Length: 386
Ligand code: PLP
Image (cartoon, rainbow, N blue to C red; front, side):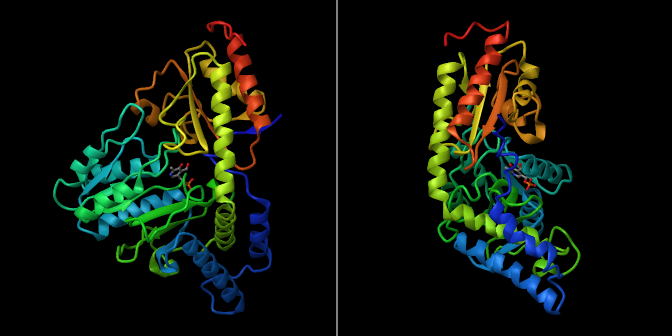
């Protein structure tokens, strides 16, 4: 059996998305900047996609800019927000994705900004009182806090942070890569200046995403070049990718509530099965708490064992794709800055399972059974009673 439980790293392309993209790879190949009919056809597809995304987020198409994905959108939001507003203080957390963390670190090294890190509890949840203190230090800040953590699934209360930022006129950016198309955003109801999406996290193509920039928060380009994206991002648009991104968002929103319930149930089923079959298992962050974590991510911690280094490899041999920590640092929890920040015991093994609409209970049974068998075979483990 082949089981793909690494959907936080990337998801399989939905065949309907591929069907929507195909004509723009073969027949409608015009450059959207060309004024002839081929170009106009491509331009029209790009603008239709922009309208689709804007409608789903209850905002205006003028606030949506296409990018090459989440990393570029994060870089644009952070670098360009600082460059365009007189802000020299960034507030963030130590468990952000590297697309944010490394960007912020670089700005600090360059002397462009001072960086404050919000205190986190041992389970990785934000200390909102400390956040309030940091934001109210006087002057405006750029607050960058992810909506859903890609390794442990912890959720940030965007509404609450947005209100804190409103009071000090701070700029609020949230890396929403893991949550986009899994939750609904009503951008008329949240005070937030930048959010983003990356198509390959919700059954769209790789290498395409978008950045939402709230009207009134005027920032310049990160990638300089031609006048594409209303001078906000040079480079010929990835037309087929943009069409696929919008189609994937549309499909995800159409069945969002149903998929939320289905995947949430699957995750709970896996938690229950793991608890009954794997002695000593615990869960990282808030990932086993349904209302406080992203329903697509489950991060487990297994007691110290001889086969720690080989665990993911052995799962892979059994046809199971999962991840240690995050895809960027796959292999083990050594190197996972998130688990390190939470004070995770490096002797224990961390595995992230992440789900999509295509996963089933039979797959969960298979993975739990294989994991239990691997643990039972490990000489350093007490034999499992089941
Ligand atoms: N931010 C988060 C939270 C992610 O999980 C990822 C990808 O894993 C990214 C940003 C980067 O997105 P992309 O792969 O589209 O560059």
